[in-house]
Image 1 (tube, rainbow, N blue to C red):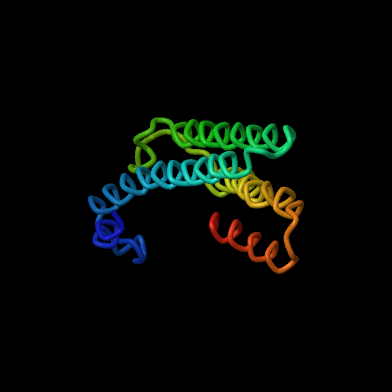
Image 2 (cartoon, rainbow, N blue to C red):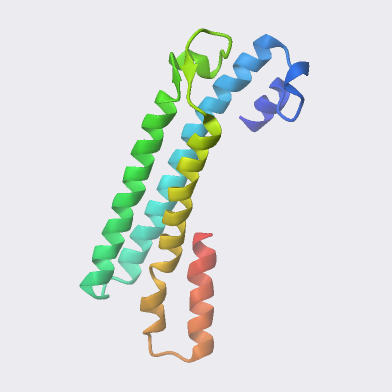
Length: 154
C-alpha cells in the first residue's frame, strides 16, 4: 500500500498530483486508517491477553483492571470506526473533496482520537508493573523484567 501511495503522490506537494491520482491516493489513505486502527486494537488486545495468561494468579483487582482496559480498547476502536465513517457527508467526500457536502475539522478529530489512544497505551504499559514489582526477586531482575514487559509492548 505504501509503495502504491508513493506512486500516487505521497511526499509531493498536492498541487503537483493529478486529480485522478489524488482521488486514488485519498481512497487508499481512507483504507489505511482502518488498517492502522485494526492493527493498534489487535496489538493492545494481544498484550492484554498475554498479561492475563502470564499474570493469571494476580489479585482480582488486577483482572478487573485488565478487563476494564480491554473494554476501553474496544470502545475506542468502535467509536473511532464510527467517527471515520461520519467524518464527511457523503462518505465519498473523503476522497473527492470537490463534491458538495460537509466534513468535520480533521485536526480536532484526530486530536480527539489520539488523546484516548495515548491514555490506553499508557494504561497497557503500566498495568503489569505493580504485579511485577511485588515479585520476590532482586532489584536488578525486577528492573530487567520490567524492561522486557515494557519493550515487549512498545
